[in-house]
Image (tube, rainbow, N blue to C red; front, side):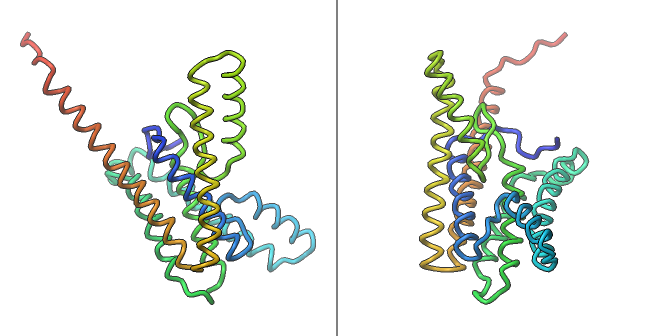
Amino acid sequence: MATIHRRPDTLAVGALLATVGGYLDAYTFVRHRVFANLQSGNVLLFCVEASARHWHRAVLLLIPVAAFGVGVLLVEILGLPRVLRLVRRPLRVVLTLQILLLAAVAAVPDDAPSQVTTVTVSFVAALQFSTFTSLRDAPYTTLAESGNLQKGIAAAHRWLSAGHPADARRAGQYALVIAAFVVGAVLGAVLTRLVGAPSVGVASGLLAAVLALLIRETRRLQRLEAAKAAASPPSAAP
């Protein structure tokens, strides 16, 4: 699988992304009564509407699914070697695109068709889902908590059974991500009811914070590499 993000996420980045995931789910549900992050619900509703021969409703449900697919495909294309030679910082490109799209959604009038919001959020969610997949030394997702909950419970069980510190650390990491998702969902529900469409700008701001953290981490690692190179003795001539 092509990838544009080769470093595992730090706890701070993982928590911020999970907060965004919970926030966007609450935002789209409160405003439009749909979950636009992952597409299981839309696929299920499509089957229900199609089985009842409500073809117009069924087709509308396929639009965010298609937007999600386009987002996944974009990340795959950006991860191809020949594309990486042209796009120097694809991870920053993807995050900047997410930030701008959510900022645009915040400016959408309240009377705009709901598909404008749900399709855009589905596309943004696909970019996030496909890009950020590893938290330190363990897989995770920032958009849906079933997998994180299963992995966290399994790690806690292994820790209680065998007492391995690594399992305790993993269980704590998953617990933090789940808690961040919950905080994001509560915050998204409250602010969406109070502010309406512009409240999605909060998610855009959180992603801007993620971008800043990633840039800072890259620069820190570059400084460490430069310091190691300067400290290494020059190789002797043959």
